[in-house]
Amino acid sequence: MIKVLIVEDSVVVRDFLVHILGSDPEIHVVGTARDGLEAIEMVKKKKPDVITMDIDMPRMNGLEATREIMYSNPTPIVIVTASFEKKDVDKSFVAIDAGALSILNKPTGFFHENHTHDKEELIKTVKLMSEVKVVTRRLKKQPKVKPISRPPVPNGLGKNRKIVAIGVSTGGPQVLNTILSGISKDFNLPILVVQHIPPGFLEGMVSWLNKSSDLTVQIAQNDKTVLPGNVYFAPDSMHMGVYRNGKIFLSRDKTNSGLVPSVSFLFKSIAREYGEKAIGILLSGMGKDGSEELNRMHGRGALTIVQDKNSSVVYGMPGEALKLGAADLVLTPDQIIRKLNEVVKDKYVTDEQVSNRY
Image (tube, rainbow, N blue to C red; front, side, top):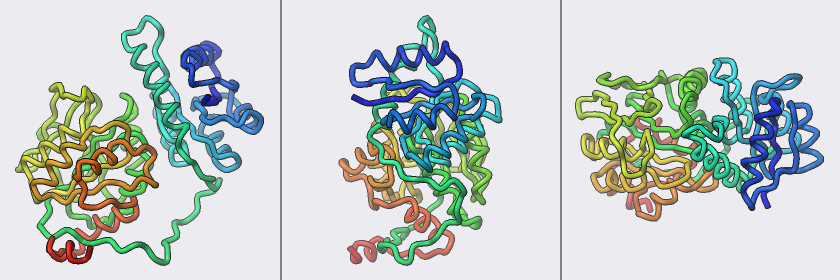
């Protein structure tokens, strides 16, 4: 049984969450808390496997509670909020930075058309997050310390790359923040990103990422030409692709996966338009969106990278790509940063040199 603690100040919503999670035979709601202070005490007593955390609460909000819990009793935390006010969305992503693993919308009521989907998404996420190993976070942010040594990573850039495409789902905000904050301000390629995230949160995530990155992070616009050193996110409920001339196109076409936006849609356009001139990266996420299309990019000469298992929150998408033989490299987020920064330094080697090193 997965032990869950629900932290929510609204009695109605709290009871609703208890009903939804309690309906699954593998989940046991061990307690509820009305605010962050109660949550901290309940975590010590009940030792839950997962916590669902609201953001806007009296006495102590969800951000402050997340910081304290990740410092004193590290536990997987899923932010569950209905507020799209800027201050609350900002707090949600700072909570991600503090150690929370995922963000979800509060489930809709019984008679809403999205109720079944919202219910299934909450249960699925809680189950997945219960398997994640979390570590203690310091209450005060510490400066990054570079390791003395790292495993050698081949260059593998051989060809004159023109564009970077990234696909990511669960665990995305954390790893994207790490990678984008580490890329040099002189980075000379555009980066296109598809991130699976509940509608309403993308603008807040982009704003949050902009604060930590030297690159310009924005939501993509149709027919806009991509620029070096800029990061473009697919908008809510729209697919994103790009033409060879660098112009973005947005679409509402249906895909086989049913996901919108879809990593597969982006990677397919990149493989078709850029071939060996592209870099494709598949990061943490559930499911297999983008795995086959990364393999297509690989077949057309693109440099293809997947995140390693140990650093991924969920190893669905990268794992599926590995099974297909779609990845040239399996890297940690720090190694991905190094790899991308090599583009700026023009440290190109031939594919033959890469293979000779391994």
